[in-house]
Image (cartoon, rainbow, N blue to C red; front, side, top):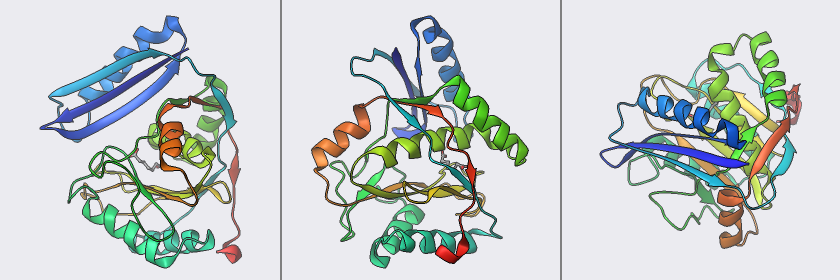
Length: 259
Ligand code: PML
């Protein structure tokens, strides 16, 4: 199997990134699909596109996706209040939650978005070695069968126009939560027109929140909340261990009494 990865930049700023894990005969289709993605992004035309193809030498970890939980909120104020409650339920200290929200609101890389994620420990300290790049969960994909199951669920929920966003974010959140030491992830999109985000964890699943920012806001990103990690091993696994989601974990509800 091969990992095919794309990233696009303009004026040294990240515009988009996406990736697949494919058999040899599907490499050229994946390369052309990713080139197309890079060229048609709402954040603008890239000046630099990098597409890499790499044979995977380590065994691929096969996993079930986190269950998907859909929530309704009126606006980003309500969305953030819900995110706070979920993270508190997961025992993330309030100080860390507020710091993470402020970082994503203002741009964690000196006011700019990061290509990767912030890693934050339970003292609110940032552990990612490069505070501009962050760390990027990478080498992951979803099988055709799992993607079919997810598609049915998303179509039934009337969210089909967001399929690519949801599927890619669910795969990424599944990989992140599978790495030892991750307690939770907070994310919202940096695409100005896309207001949704999520709080993901092994304990509660992928809780999708339709509004975590206002339309037109181009700030966003990811924070991985961690406890007791060896940073080098953590980053290595996040960036290198290939993960394939082979089964969709289903649509679940969480009891709001718990949060
Ligand atoms: C992104 O890829 O821009 C992050 C999207 C996060 C939300 C995805 C969803 O709609 O569930």
